[in-house]
Image (tube, rainbow, N blue to C red; front, side):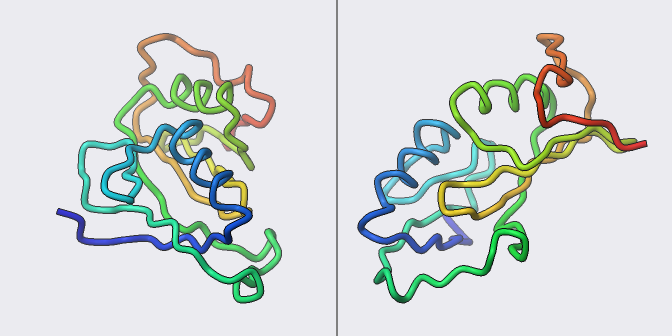
Length: 137
């Protein structure tokens, strides 16, 4: 059962691009018109809602706060590398004393966050191969 929907306003011109980004690049699971985060708990869905072009006024990218944030258990470097290879646009990704953090931007400029407490990565992927990855001491 979905308990929260995050609404992403799209126009007729941007719908297909945004739909493809969440479904094909980010691999969010689509079910009954909603996209679900790639995590086991399916209580938050993303809804692409049509809006008139003149009614979708977004602030400049530098003033936008993340729309949502989600946690993955482990394998953060591998997960981010796979997203990047499929075409996900990263604002940044880093490791810090508490684990990992990344901010991704969708085609409309909406940011969201991914975080992970574990430094475990089964595949041994080197996150420093990503051009936007750095360490925070």
